[in-house]
Length: 110
Length: 113
Image 1 (cartoon, rainbow over the protein chains, first blue to last red):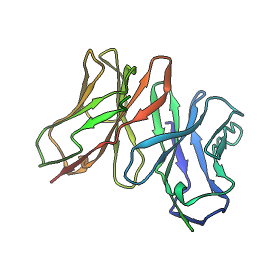
Image 2 (cartoon, one colour; image 1 turned 180 degrees about the horizontal axis):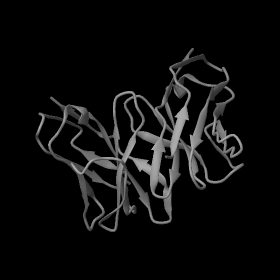
Image 3 (spheres, helix red, strand yellow; image 1 turned 45 degrees about the horizontal axis):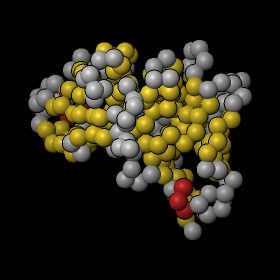
Image 4 (cartoon, chains in turn cyan, red; image 1 turned 120 degrees about the vertical axis):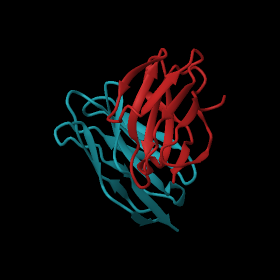
């Protein structure tokens, strides 16, 4: 069945470091791909999305490119801030159903 | 403009009991999805409601049922609670033509003892 596998955490980085969180997927058809973020004490928020192969989603300095050949949607940011500390979820949508990864906890230290 | 709201925020039940959770979608949204998020895990899709009908269902037993009202609000019912039903239950809403952008509520944390 359809599924998402993402890099396990937790991840701890120093401020201004480069961030990569890996995400790969398995899906039939042509899924849309998403990254959601959950800040401490808050609900899930959409961070970025891509709806077809080679699309790049971007928001708040984060980027992810839909790579059909490698079935991947890795999240990157060139310079993380303390305020980026959160749990990040990769997800895919096929039809009306979403599949989420298990989440990657990121802590950025000053 | 209020976002997605859920009630109650926390709930404690015992095994075998029944529970009802409620969700009001974001203004202008007509589609509601429910998810179960166990501790340390990603959300698992339970089902989605549109036009007062269940449109799609994930891999959850029939003990999980739902309803959508004419004002698009929704309820999630769980019967014969098990310890393993303890989780954060999330509601997400989306609008017609923008179904891919789901907006999540803060969730209801259910503890089954």
